[in-house]
Structures are given as C-alpha cells and as structure tokens.
Amino acid sequence: MTALGDANLTFSLQLSEHRRSLHHTGRTVATTFEKLDTLRERYKEIDETIKILAGLGCDVLHNVDCTRLAVDPRFQGMEEKFGAVYYNFPHAGVVPGFFDGHPFVRWRHANLMHLFFRALRAFVKPGGCIKVASNSSATGVRFSDIISGAGNSEYVHAETFPFLEWTLARYGRSYGDRRDQYKRPEDGDVYNAQRANSDMVYCFTYKPSGSPPPPVLISYPPTKDELFTSNEGRAGRLPPGAVQRRKKVDELYDLFLSYVQGIHIG
Image 1 (cartoon, rainbow, N blue to C red):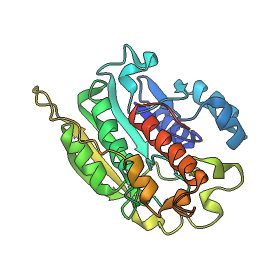
Image 2 (image 1 turned 30 degrees about the vertical axis):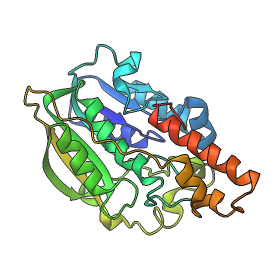
Image 3 (image 1 turned 180 degrees about the horizontal axis):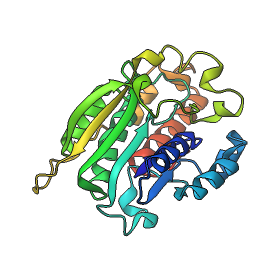
C-alpha cells in the first residue's frame, strides 16, 4: 500500500491505523513531495507523526516526485508490489500571478495526472487499486485529467463516490504549500470556492493488456515569445519594453522548463 504526495502525513497515519485495526499485513509506504526540513517549517507536529507511523510499520519517504518513481533508487525492488495507491488532491503547485485554470499554467496539472498514472505502471500489481481524491470543480487538476490519464495507462474506472462518505475522509487536511505555516483549510473556506460536498474519490483498477500502452499525452508550456507579448501574469503588468518584463519572462520560462525536464521543485 502506498500513499503519495501526503503533505502533513495525517492521511497516511489514518490509513495505517485503519489497516492495523483490520489486521492487514504487508508493507506500507507514505511519501511527501517536500523535503523533511520544509515539512518541519510548516508542520510542527511532523516528527511526532513520523514516529507514530514508524511504530505502525509504515516507511516514510520524503522528496518523492510521483511522476518519476522509476528513476528514484528508493523504489528499486518495489516493482509490481503496490496493491493499492492513494493520492489525495493532486496539485502541480501555484505559479504566482496565474489562477490554476489559466492556459499558461494549467498544462502542468494535466501532465501531472498523465505522468502519475504512467509512472505507476511499473509498480502496481495487475488488479491493483488506485484512488485519487479531488474536487469535481477543480480548475487545476480536473476530473477529466484524472479519468483520461488513468485510461491512457490502462487503469479502468471502477467507481466515483463522495469524499465525505469515505471511511478515510476524516484526516487533517492541509494546503500542501507555504500557507500551512500560518493556517489550515479547516480555519476557513476550504480551497476558496471548492466546497467539501464537491470532493470526490475516483477509483481505478489496473488491467494491463500485455501490449505497450499508447504514448503519454503531454502538454507543453507557452513559448517565451508568447509570454513576452502577453499581458497576463506579473510580467504582463510591466511596460512592454521594460528590462524587468524580460527578466520576469525569463524567470517564468526557466521555471516551466524545469517542470518539463523533471526537476523536482517544491
């Protein structure tokens, strides 16, 4: 069993306790995208949570990019070992100056799902279960990205049900970014306009055909010229000929290239 992208590890804790109560055996792996030092800045309780997880027999791995498991040496020997994988509220990260659904940045969210499902193929057992929780109205990672990303890598959609009806829904939600240092979703509106009643759990079963899957559907970022001539984002608010505008565009384009090249960015 594997939980991916668990920011404060409270979901992994609840999952591990649930498995213990049902007398389930087998290896449990919990991963975070961020490094441990970053987690300690955001979650004062993180070391205690990790200690409890260890007592429950759960291995915790940090700095894990779920789209690049095959090149992470820590996952060597885990091929075809995952019977169940959980990924709650996937998000490719905020780009300052853009909302999640903006076409200049949304390609990152679509790629996240397509690359996530493709990366899992080497590690999930045939017949294994994948559960992805997400808001049905999300503009970043959309439900269509989840469904198409799964189908393109031979995961068959089994069911979708409301997140609040899930046995594992009652954990300590977090934003998964710098906001967690001073507030949590339960302190106010949950992810702005995204309401809990719209949160869903999308369930899939891995059914490989034995033939090579189709190529991964990858979207690409805007060109540097498109960024420079656009009035969008922080660079777009600067005068067209300004040196600062070119600098902002260069920084944004370098950020986009890092995503394309698979460089781990927190």
